Figure 1 (spheres, rainbow, N blue to C red):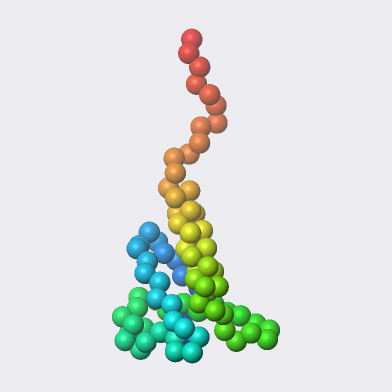
Figure 2 (cartoon, one colour):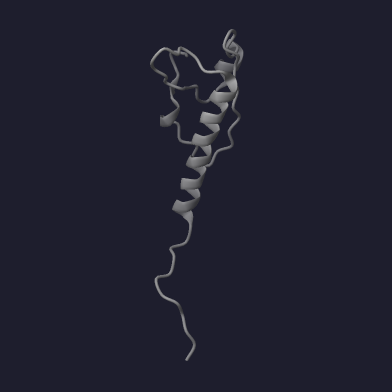
Length: 88
């Protein structure tokens, strides 16, 4: 978690390519990588947990990005026709 991080749900891809950089629980992501990042995302968790393993974090973030992309595609899809065109 960084001072510049935002909850992952607030991140909007907006069609841009994404490179996810995931760090280990013990070392995290390097300061150099975080300095180059356009966005730093965090996964808010509660209860007894204070961190997630990297595979779980990746799954959560990829699912969010896939859903964001699907929504973008649907927003740009042509409107579905209400009727069926018939000849004659």
